[in-house]
Amino acid sequence: METDVLIIGAGVLGLSSAYYMKKRDPSRKVVVVEKQSGPGQGNTAKSEGGYRNLFASETNHLLADTTIDWFHHLQEDLEYDVGLHELGYLWLLPEDEYRQRREPFDICKKRGARVLEYSSEELKTMIPDLVTEFDDNEDSEMMALEDVEMGVFGPKCGSVDVDRLVKAYEAEFLKIGGEIHYNTEATKLLHDPVEPLGIPGEPFVWQESRIAGAETSKGKILAETTVVACGVWAPKVLDPIGFDCLMRPKKRQIFAFKDPKLSRLLNTKDFNEDNKLPVTILPTAGILLKGEVSEESIWLACADNLGRKFELEDDPQPEDDYYSNNIYHALVQYLPCFQDVRPANSWAGQYAINGFDQTPVVEAGPGLIYVGAASGSGIMKSDALGRIVDAVNEEKEYATLYGGRGFKVSDLSVAKRRVERETLVV
Image (tube, rainbow, N blue to C red; front, side, top):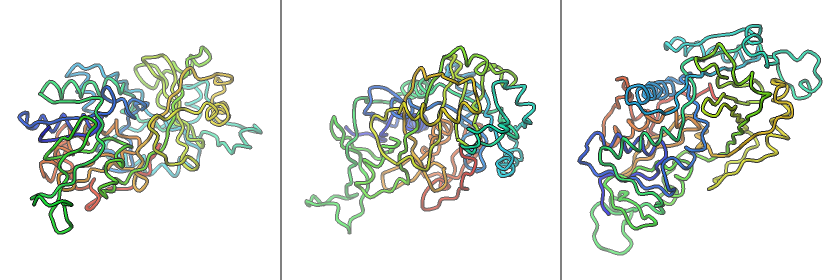
């Protein structure tokens, strides 16, 4: 097969890129290959689907804020129900952490983002199940858990159904003539000379070379441009050609709860129109919860960084004792309603971690574009990144993001990288 553009990976970044590259020139042949049997079945499917526009980095704010606006356009104007719910993000902060985070939140306000603050007394009223002061609690003292001093809330944040989102991108891409081959794994990138001489062993070091497509489980595909958008699996095809994707995989787990004991917490009022628990980040332990509107459940995750190894797993599995013997003990201190409550379901995926600056990478080489290293925020930046990939392919200096805002594409590259290190990390 020959094509103008070959995209490896039908996750949210691959399909977003495919859509915008095809949309720019419908006569261009754009082919997506995916080893799974459908769209977004890798780590996209394992995501909790949270999105936020509150970032310390101007770059991350712009990528996310424009993508969130696109989500609304997709649901409200194009009439795709992508399960968009503006639940909000709520940071529960001890006094010291509140002082440390004050600056990045103030930066968000200066950009025009809405940021609300609630005192511990207000939080007690709004979330009656929440413990904000531990007094002489021996267990909390042993775990060094801190009192909640303030709550910082971002209203333009929330949750999207990732399965519906990738299917919307898939539908739009196919509608304009895109081509997708599922159950097709890219096994090797083709590294060829620009002007072959027909001599065994090409390309030689003195020859100009390029990526000319990929070997797949169903045969060779030649392409003018090959886009690698396969998340944590990118090193499998990029390492053999010596292309550094600045990414390492790390497992993340989600636990879902449906229990009458949690009904009042789930149906927390005053934060959003759905009257559901916002995406809530507990202090100290790094535990994150959100009300899942479609299931009437609560989802829980935890960012355990130090001590959690980097490791690529084709089928990562949740660890039952990670909740019961680890997270649970801190969780019930802040939210006693979880006492003796077990998860109804659990699953695991992998973050594509860029440990240097927590910001995605879009890097080009001869015949090649890599997009990834989104560090757990690929969903919420997906539309912007797809537009940037398209602009890189067109050798444009700026990409036009949704709403007309411009973005200098070299800022996300490696050689000319110009981004701020993200400090407002969940």
